[in-house]
Image (tube, rainbow, N blue to C red):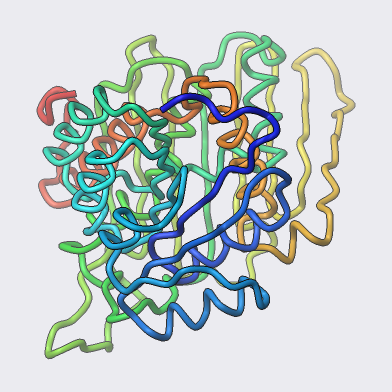
Length: 361
């Protein structure tokens, strides 16, 4: 597909209009040069939520995403359907030349990710994986500081997310590993992606320990008990010698900070805090830290649950469409994040480190 000119409005279709699909709708409404013209979701409640997010703007509505792809006049689509459907929806998109932003995780299965990698290579439209955490402003600045050498050579990276449990979803699909890929895929592909982005080295192995210890233990869905992890530690070794740690707890409501990232090098340290929206830089030879704050505009805060990052992600996606540029978050990025999460899930089950080579990465 040819790049849209700067005077053209890019027309979007939203496939999947649950919580995240509606967040995309609200953020696209804030972005010049784009317009949501169609939605698709088989659930009438979800389509009702989309109407609220659209604030009275009339769009074409479909129950079946394939009908949207056939008939809606869209240039780009956003896939925000349940994880286990991404593979099939992407394959249908690849039968068109439309640009696509697919929410994380790329797929729930490593082999499906490999198939999508092959299929995306010949797709004429832009293919972009939604990784909102890259666009949280303190996190983005931390990446910049590390890459410009502010902390010297990076040796250790720690990512800590202490938060609330998984929210309810339509048909409770997010309570079971077979639909999500497992917590270390569903939730933590964000963090494995950040590890690669910050460290700038190839991951070689993952060792994880986790459990389903507090959340969902007394829930039953059609006679089944949820099997998703609600806490884990995961250590990742990288080819260049750096190490990264993920500390996840999903029964830590009301923590002072939901997300803390610490990148430590041989010359200093960079720390990002969300929702405090600040970055702290320290040097080994200086006692006084430097603190940078990132005030969040009210309209961005109200547009979603990701601290303004979805807006900046869409800004970058829009500009890449306009300029026919490459995706900032590629299919390979998305596939590797899934592979790292899948290795972590397997490590928890088998009690041993998992080499990425065992999964074909």
